[in-house]
Length: 419
Ligand SMILES: CC(=O)N[C@H]1[C@@H](OP(=O)(O)OP(=O)(O)OC[C@H]2O[C@@H](n3ccc(=O)[nH]c3=O)[C@H](O)[C@@H]2O)O[C@H](CO)[C@@H](O)[C@@H]1O
Ligand SMILES: C=C(OP(=O)(O)O)C(=O)O
Image (cartoon, rainbow, N blue to C red; front, side, top):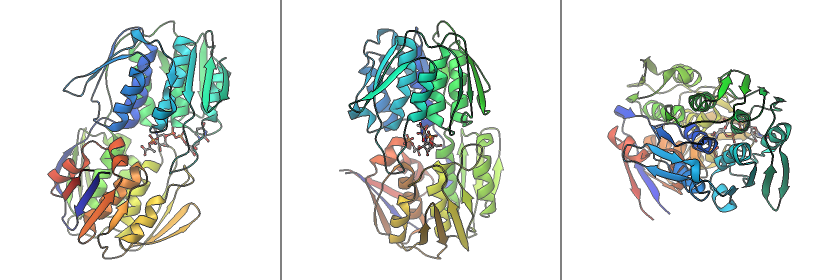
């Protein structure tokens, strides 16, 4: 399995271009199933999850062409299979996003239940309940969600908890339903807003995305469009932490500062100087050791769970004690044990990590367990003395485009060892 080797101790300097958001492009690709004309999507990040989604749609009969400017041309007119197999769904949870579009557009879907993964059990009961409320007949059999419907009917759906892909699945299904759907307690993440904007550019009538109440007036059909995916706020945050943890100065370009308020506030609290423009963020931590910060993850606009592991790494070398509380997923501290191998002082108590910053960590071989845990280990490697070798980096390729190249342009000593 490929590994990444980092020789720590170099403050990072320079500019890094941020790619399109993984968590926006995946639902947007699924939304193409709803259209009866070709759709093109720009600012597509080069990620393993994108390749998996293309494979998933491809085996449903959708024609997809990826051009050299990272634009995907999607022609859904040839869709003739409504099936998402376990083999693909198990590698990428976002495959569940084809469920709503398939039922709404083709009246049937058979989608494997996504398995539990390293960060928690992650059930999909809200997706199923939402589709049933819209009038679909849904049963779970042999590990597959089997859904059927003539035409979905708009209704009022109050979600039991804030779920990002749950909100997205129902929003997509409701876009072609007869009548109006109101989703209450909807997820407000920027990626939900991006999906709604893409659907609206296809002719959908969605209002309120980005608030807790989304109103979808169903339409008869969705047409083709071109849509540019929003920048990845988690990739942006990860590179800013790379600047902070290494005591450097990093500018993220093609970023969107407005969707990173909670993360930027914590970086400032950690002692970083932050400057922002319309589409860039500059972080300066030169000559300073970060200060420990307390963090509680929660749905947007609060601090994102997808940035928790990176800030855990930052606290490991910060001055003072930082307490991190994870409220979204029940098992998202797998990186803590690996950080301890570098010399970090972390104590886990239920959903809380208590981190006492140390002045030095030293490189060690480490095992990545999930996407953001991998990013956290790479960040820790940037400051650990000597070589840190991160194994199972296929996790990182799910959600970061060329991370070692991008960190390399900032001056990091980092390389990939092939299988
Ligand atoms: C592809 C994508 O966009 N992934 C993101 C999405 O995942 P995802 O959409 O899977 O995460 P959710 O927002 O659904 O999960 C939030 C919480 O709700 C629970 N839950 C969710 C659905 C459900 O039917 N029943 C249920 O109990 C989950 O177990 C979890 O505890 O949002 C997460 C939370 O911001 C992020 O970490 C992921 O990066
Ligand atoms: C948990 C994540 O992704 P996914 O929902 O695709 O597993 C993530 O992006 O950190």
